[in-house]
Every structure is written in structure tokens, then in C-alpha cells.
Length: 87
Image 1: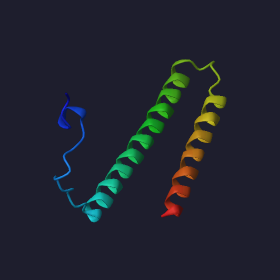
Image 2 (image 1 turned 180 degrees about the vertical axis):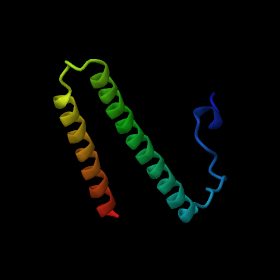
Image 3 (image 1 turned 60 degrees about the vertical axis):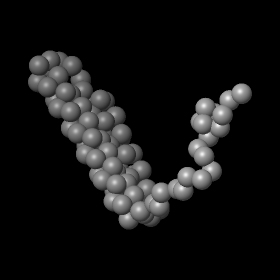
Image 4 (image 1 turned 45 degrees about the vertical axis):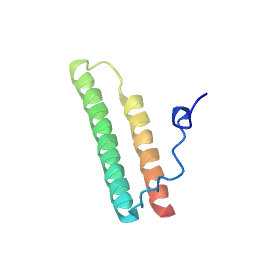
């Protein structure tokens, strides 16, 4: 017969560790800021790629790609502002 431990069920005698909510909020804020940095970095890399493509191939139109990138950046900014307003 299987024991309770082999089922993956924690024993009932073990107490839960207390949650330090201030530490959790600090970690959440650090994660949010790191995500914003990655998002900003991705937009800068995409814009740099578009500008490099335009400088190498002058005949290629990149106006529509820049417009799409600007729309994505604006939408991302709007979502960030809405998420900040929920706090």
C-alpha cells in the first residue's frame, strides 16, 4: 500500500512558513521593473534593426514597420499605465 508521502501529500504535522508580505512586494516590484527593462530593450533592438535595414537598403519602405512598432509600444505603455492604476 502507498504511504501518504509517496502520494506527494505533505504531512499534516508540518507547519506552513510565514509569508513576509513586504519581501514579496519588493520581489514583485523588482520583477516588474526587470520586465519593463526587457520590454524597452526589445523595442530599442527592433527599432535599431529597422533603422539598420533602412540604411543598408535605401529602397525598402520601412514606414509601415515603424508605424506597427510605434503602435505596439503605445499599446504596451497603455497596458503598463492601466496596471499601475489598479494598485
